[in-house]
Length: 347
Image (cartoon, rainbow, N blue to C red):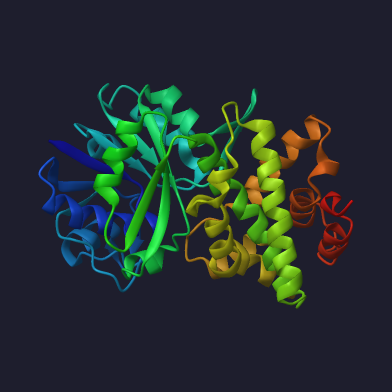
C-alpha cells in the first residue's frame, strides 16, 4: 500500500490535498492517511498546522474549502516524508534546493514523486528543470503535472483537464489513479520535459498579458500577445529540452489551455496589470495582493533572460525579453506594444 506525502500546502497544494484525501479513501492501493508538510505560520494567533488538523481548512491559502479529515498537517519536513511511497511536490520553485537538501537520505529509495511546481532552476550549467533537481538530489523517479488548473476552481470541483508527463509510463499511470476524478481529467504523455517547460514559461507570457490589460490594449492585442508567447514557448522548448519535443504536447492542457487560463485568471496576470496601472514595485504588489503567495513569472523571466543572453538569442525572444526588462530594468511598460508589432513571427 502506498503512503502519500504532499510537500507544500499553499493554494495549489491545499487544492490537490483535497483531491488526494478523498481519492485514497476509495482506492485500496493507497494508505488512507495523507501527510501534508506545512511551513509553520501563526494565523490569527494559532499555528497553521493546528488550524488545518482541527478545523480541516487552510484558512490562509485556501479559505472557504474543507480539507478531508484524513489529510494531516505536519510541520517537520523530515517527519512528513518519512515512510512515504509517493511524494507530491507543490512549493514555489525558488525553494526546491533547500527542501531537497533537508530530506536527502530521508526518502526511501523505491519512492516515486510528481512535481506540480511551475518554474525552472538556474545553476552553473544553465537552465535545469525542477524535476531534474529533485531526481538528482533524491535519486527517485519524478513525473510532472501541469494544466489549466486554477486552484480555487479545482477545490470547488469545477471541471478541468490536466496533463501528466512521465518518463516511466507506469509511474505516470499510478499518479493518474491517485489524482483523477470525474471533474479532474488527466492525460498521461511521455514528453515530460515539454510538459514541465510549458508550466514554467506560460507564467512569463501571463505577465505580458497582464501588462496589456493594465494598458487597456483590448482583447485583440492580448490575444496576439498570447499567440506570440506560445510561439516563443515552442521555440524555447525546441532549443532547451534534451529529448524529443512533440508539437502535440502544446495542444494538451499543459500547453495552450494552461496558457489561456493563466493569461486571464492567474496571479501573474493580476499583479502585472496592477504594475502597469500603479507604478508600484513587484515586491510591494506581491505583499499587497497575494496574501503570502509567491509570484513565479517575473523570476522565471529573469532565469530565462540570463540563459538567452548567454547564448545570444535575445532577439529571437522579444516577448520574454521585454517582460524581463520591464520587470527588472525599468524599461517602460508601454514598450510591450512595440515588442509585439516588430515580433520576428511577423517577418
